[in-house]
Length: 519
Image (cartoon, rainbow, N blue to C red):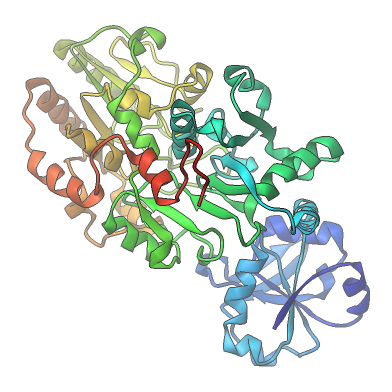
C-alpha cells in the first residue's frame, strides 16, 4: 500500500466513487468539506476508538463509523481517505490491517492549510543538515489555550534549566507560543527565539518562512501534551513528549490511537509508569525514558516571598488544594460530577460549608490555598471574602509568571483527588488528602489506571466535610497516619527523588554543551 495526498485532481476523478474516511474528527471533517465538496460521497468510515464509533450527524448527513467492520463489502473503487493530524502514523497502523491491505493498494490523506505548508517546507529543506536548534511548545492545541499554559510545565522547566546551565551558548532555543511579545524582553540577550504558533499557517510569508526554517532544521523538538505541530518531522529529527503528569487517571479512554509513530521518546517518572504508558499510549518500551519530570525539580526550590506576591497573609501552615478538572469552559466536557454547585468544588459544595471550613482554619492558624485546574470552568466559583480561604487564579499565576510547582514547595500539605499533582507532591514526603465524593462517577466516565484505585492513593480519603476537617486537624497537630503508605508508593511513583530530572533528560538524549556536539 502507498499513501498519497488528496488533491483537486483526485477529487475531480472520483465521479461516483464512494469515500470512506479513516479517523472520525468533526474538526478535520469540517476542514475537508470546506476545501472540497465531498460530503455527498462519504459512505462511511472507520476508527479504532470506541467512543468515535456509531452514527454521526454531520451537516445534515448521517455517517456510520465502525471498527473496520465489513471492509469486504466496500468496493475496491472506493477512496480511503485519512483525516487525521498524523496521517503517516495513521497510515502505518491502517496498512498493517490485513483486511485493508489485501483489498486496497493506495490510501489518501487530506492536508489542511498547515499541513500543506509544512510538507512544502519539509520538501524544500530535505537535503539540509540539521542545526543546533531546539524547539519547545507546551500545552494542548490552540483551541484549548488558557493564559500561561503555552509557556509552562515540563517544557518551561527544562528550558529554564538549559538557560541556567548556558546551553544557549551552543543551541538556539525556539519557543512556539500564543503571544511572543509577552516573553521577548525577558530573554533579551539570550540565544532564544519566540514565534506565534499561528505562524504555521499565516499568510505572512516572512514570519512563516522563519517559523518553518527553525522547525525543519531543529535537532530536537520538545513538547507537553499536543505534538501535532511536529507531525511531519523529518526522519532525522528527535521529538520528545514531555507530557504533564504521571497520575491515576485512565489514559486509554481518551487517547486516539497509538503514539508509536507520533514521536520518538516520552519521559516518565519511574519504571512503573514506563510500563503503564507503554500500554496506554501505544509505545514501544525503548521509547520510554525514565528521567523524572523537569517541573518536579522546582518543588525543591520554591520561590521566596510568595505570600506577599499573592496577597496571602502569614500563617502557621499552608494547605494547597488542587482539584482536577471536571467541567471545562473550553469544550463543555465533564468527567466527574456536574459542577453546578455554589462553589464549584468537590465536598465543600456550598458557601455555608466553606465558611465553616474557614472558621476551623482560623482557629488553627492555617490558610487553605485553592488553585483550580487551568481548564476548569470557574464561573460557578464566587468571589470569596474569607480570611483563611484563598483562590489562586490561573490568570494571576500567568501574570506573575509563576509555575504552580514553584509554590508547592511551600505547602505543608496537599489536597487533591485524581490529579497527577499528588504523585509529584509525594517527592516532598508531606501529608496528602484525596477528595473522593464523585469517585464512582469518575470511574465510570474516565476510569483509573488501577482496578482498585484506593490501594494507590498515598494519603487520607475524604468523603465529607467532617473528613475534610479531620485532615486539616492532622496537619495542624503533626500526625501523619499515612506516612508509611506514602513512602512506599513514592518509591514506585519515582525512581529518583532529587532535583536533577532536567539534567537526566538531556543526558539520556545525548544533549551536551561546552563545545561538545549533540550526538
